[in-house]
Image (tube, rainbow, N blue to C red; front, side, top):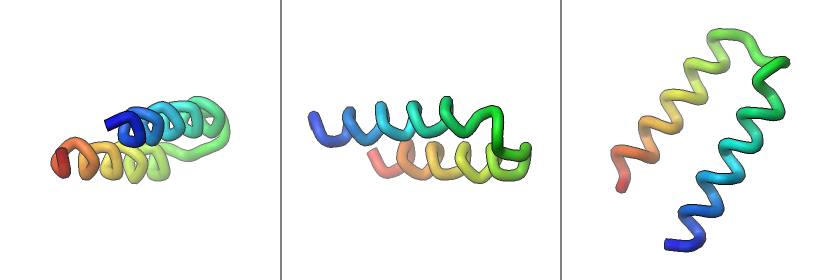
Length: 41
């Protein structure tokens, strides 16, 4: 459980760091990854 929360926090931090550098297409791919994690719960 704790590991899953840490993974989510790290992903959020990475998204914030890259937000100003990535394109819209890359943002969509990131969202699809988040959707995959949500479905795997």
